[in-house]
Image 1 (cartoon, one colour):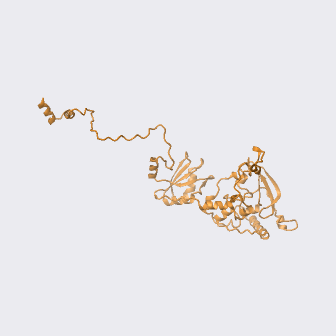
Image 2 (cartoon, helix red, strand yellow):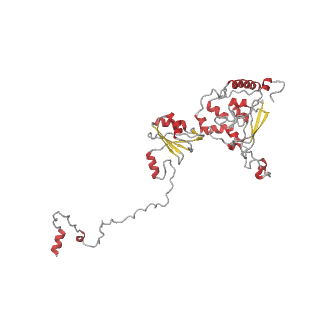
Image 3 (cartoon, one colour):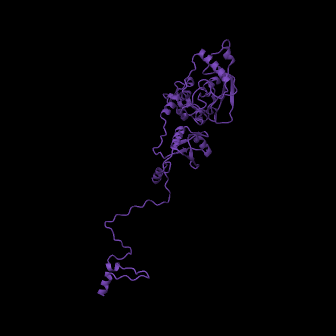
Length: 386
């Protein structure tokens, strides 16, 4: 250990003695009733090598026991969880957070400089109001769009699962279902995620998880505005049952004047129509992959023009491009009539086509009150023949 009874009196007097750890929601678990064991000066911190109070607990059923790995001073300096060392606000590795906020790591690595730096940071923590981070993180600028897009909105309890049973991998596990470890195929040893170091994660260097997230951010899709300038409507998907019209208005009024908000509770979506195209473009840019309401990340897309909606409905698609299900019981499309070689004459009275034309040209009697018309030529010929 870096401290002893005969030296480093200042550090020995400032060994950590806390009553509750600094944890993220994922490491704490979903069980509201949790029991922890507390061991005063149980281990040395993995970063500053000073003894600290170790907490150990089980986050849930069929989960592995977890414990704190670093002291609270190191946790406050980086604003991270004492167990997983992920950022408490965004749930991301330190390397990703520092890249998104343009922060350069200034923590020394040597023992003497590390102790001096830790002492100065402890004084700054004591003089602060404990509501904001200290050091370079407290002076950092606003987070970038990349950081807001990658931020985790909900806990990831899958990270608390037990480790893989090494006896089961060898085919020698005899516990069966009573085994507290996982009986699954292990990951590829050549996978970079299989080699993680707690110090590299804390200092923000050579972190394979951070490299994976940064690559995902570089290939993240964008929301391009449609060519039709008349479209000023945004589609908001993934709404929960508790999202109201006022919550949507409070999140979108800052980008421009809102003309109308239409909630569709059945499909858990909404349509927000702006008064100007500029306001709709600004809202789409600021909220795409970053809109979180009531802890849920919502999908933001552009609406569709009226002509596109009519075309999709004719082709069997609804307004959002989803295929429409056929209605049972409706007749199918009628086949076209067979083409006739010669056009048949218009026989509206179903008369025998072999009859004489004189019989077919029978004139109707005139209406009452009008003089009788002169006889036609065909009737005169019939009278002469008679």
